[in-house]
Amino acid sequence: MKEGMSDNKKNFFEDVYEVVRLIPEGRVTSYGAIASYLGSKGSARMVGWALIASQPFAAIPAHRVVNRVGMLTGKQHFEASNAMQERLEQEGIKVENDQVVEFEKLFWDPAKELL
DNA sequence: CCAGTGACGGCTA
DNA sequence: TTAGCCGCCACTG
Image (tube, rainbow, N blue to C red; front, side):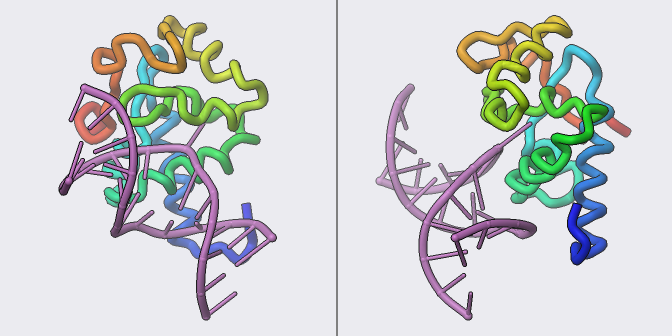
């Protein structure tokens, strides 16, 4: 993390981490869903940015966050290009061609399922 | 200071 | 239906 970072930004990052930590095993959510839940509706990109910064913290299951159609767009940011898919399959999620199988059934929306 | 670049997503053609 | 455009905003050169 950076030193000169404003409190707002820092809190946004930590809020993202908190939500991601709450994603149940075997379920996935999207960048936009998290941004929306945190009140920054159009800032899905910032969620992705926060996850890049979360790389060093293994406790955050960033592999459970994919884009709005269920594609593993962030896999290149993991240690290995296949780490994201392997972690998902390890919890029972099937992935074909960088796409989560039955994404709609596994989708976990923080705005609805979190309270 | 300015322009380019994204782990995105909604809208338009 | 597939492609492209653009708003979003932190960061980099």
